[in-house]
Image 1 (tube, rainbow, N blue to C red):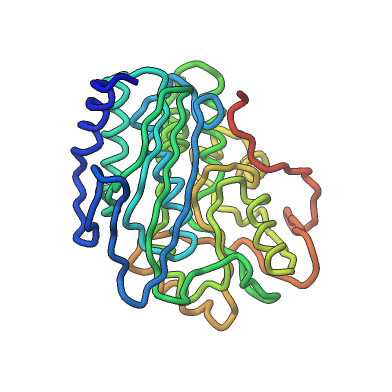
Image 2 (cartoon, rainbow, N blue to C red):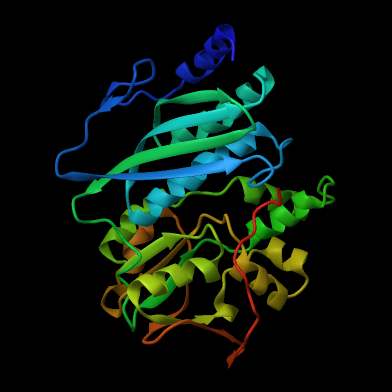
Length: 323
């Protein structure tokens, strides 16, 4: 890109609203310099979103920016970390001021809410893609990992499940939402709520956790494999929104959607029996709804139950937009 185009982009990304005291050097140098809190460990995650795979090329840049940063925030939430700093690598085919303005609007609104400072990145010319590296910190030795689940632990999820997949279905139809329900589901696909405070609260009670990005069935399998256990999942207990129930047409159809819906960015976590009574108190200040959907057992795999009987719904994981 020409120098004046880079200057234009730099003006957009230097005008951010967050200025953290622990950032010694931010945007403008060869690298950023930050100060890590004492007795803390650094937690780092990176996600890439590509136009045509994770979002449609003509999608609202405000929504795209929220979704891109929210996916990273959700990763740190699953570990129980406090988000603090991020870098952004943006590849764009041309400099589009309207698109950049919208992207910055969505990005900064979410970053300001979670007090995350943009400390650097890169801009190149090419097919539209967004890569964010988010860094945060956690008290030493307190990270929640995937490998800590044990037989007898209870299985929980935050929020509702399935809305993101339903919203994606609305998007892929190629028409504008035809009613308020479809519009709500579309917005829930883009505007997820990273469970950052809940993740921090779960450090004292959860034995394992991850965020639901590839679908509950697929992501729960990661916990089970890492921990060497199995699970019984009661599909009747899945938390489903009224909008999803109306959109799907039946509770069973909605439950199937909820089991495979990705990019939910809710948390799936396990709690030992000894900590179960403390869960509500730990989450009280976070205003986060949680639902117990099953239990961890010895063995391998997931046994999905529906109305008291084991079912084989042949559920697959999450598929992004086709390229």
